[in-house]
Length: 262
Image 1 (cartoon, rainbow, N blue to C red):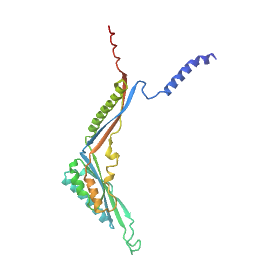
Image 2: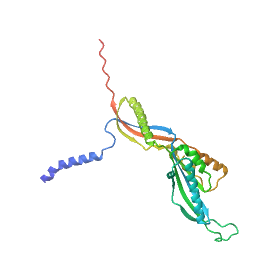
Image 3: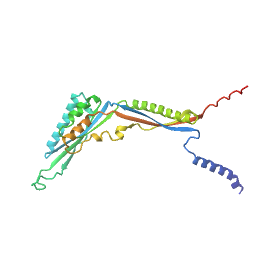
Image 4: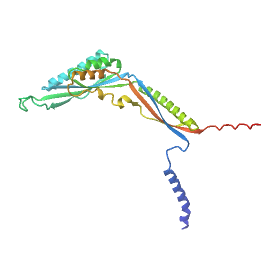
């Protein structure tokens, strides 16, 4: 019984510490202000990528393969004219399927020769965006090429991102100084900074890549003309960098009392 009594104070102390830890909060235990800063920039891209498909349909699979290889050769020939490296064109695995097209009117089902469809994806890296108009314009509208999609980027994206983070923190400090002055405090040191992922607003809003993709059917001349204009366009990259920043708030230095009037 005496042993039990001697353990009670230690047990109570440990429970109190555990309760204190359980009630701990990630919120700082000092006066602080939490603000969000941001920086925006519209930057012209200097590199790009062009994606498309080569689709060939023929009753003779060997003839279809020959035509597909001919189209690939035409793509590489155009790249060579533009002094682009051959390895910048990646041709993915060729897929062969049987087409289930309906037979012509008056012809019995199964009487027509089967059609073979060969399809492959091609991705061309454009390391100099100055070649974009000649490459995209030279390939768009060619027979057997379909499903065009474009993507643009910056070779100096890391440097641009660093500059945006710096500007975003400066914007956060400006906002925090306004809040501190309004509350009669002085803005102290930064105690925490969390930069969010840089956002390409054009991509986030769905204004790139999918918008340029053509449908798997023949469109009107007007529709094709609009898609060509979209594909040839080189949009600026609209980049936004937000940051969350916590600043310490300090009391203003007390004003010196005025000397008594004599």
